Amino acid sequence: MNPSVKRWAPFAAVPIIAVAAAIAIPMTTNAAQDLPEKTPQQLLEFVADSDVTAFSGEFTQTSDLGLPDLSSLGSGSTTGADGDGFMSALVELATTSNDARIYADAEQGARLQVLDQLDERDVIATADDGLWIYDSGEKTALHVTHEGSSDASTPPADVPTPSSVAEKLLDSVDDTTAVAVGSNGTVAGRDVYELVLTPRDETTLVGDVTISVDGETGMPLGIAVTAEGASSPAFSVAYTSVDYSTPDSSLFAFTPPAGVEVTEKAIPADAHSDDAAPDDSTTPGDAAPEAPDVTTTGAGWGTIVELAAGEASASLEGLDAITTPVDGGRVLSSSLVNVLITDDGRVFAGAVSVDALESAAR
Image (cartoon, rainbow, N blue to C red; front, side):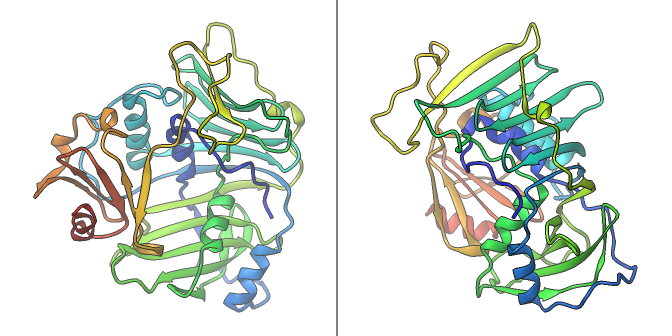
């Protein structure tokens, strides 16, 4: 399977990683590709048996969620833990296009580069040096390590790729999802199969998810998520180029340039330990990053995520201009995801109707 780095990421790191996880899918599906026929089950097994351990590639992001104008929302560094930076990254994810490059190696780690015209943003995760999140425009860097960990095989973050996102989707396929084989096509110059996942859950806003699978290696090369009743994807992800050779080791080394403000963060080696304290190297006044207090209701495609009151309050200022008032709160609606912010500060989100969110809040 495609290389996976330890599945943990500090809440402060989520925005920049999320930005790079939404990738547009430039592919040709009308050309008849000479690939052996496979059943849905055979195609699922083909992906599961993929033995790709190193690769690099480039991809481009676009979203078409039908959102209102979000330009009035926060701005700021995506490497910081501040609310403005968090909201700025989410606005970018939902409304703009982004080019990115990924280098991955199961032995060395992973490096993600979000390519702006003038600035550089990087997420680098390795076993030896933990996680770095760097923003050249803001001249800031966040360095996250596991406190007291002697296990060199467990870097503290999972850098997502179009492939890893697709694999996680396929790992969760169960009887709530119909699986079919679509048309063959081409992604990043490679012949691909298409796996089409259609929710059997009538409560979800998701119409279907199409996953493009490399016909030679079995590695997923793209995802396209289409809302119920829509004719084009609302959210999609795919490579524009891919190279299966091992990236050079120098690509996984990072030294902050002169003049960059570095914030050091440490998490317990056991991230669930209640007694663990921040490492002495943590910047004074800064607590070690923690995952937000998140609970879920429902299951599968109808899952609703709840953030406790106060968890996202710093990020939600200015939402009055782009949300709609409802009984007990305000709603930000899109074709694929709805978000309910209650009057008492809780946040509910999911690919479900507003009515479902209001029921969860009650």
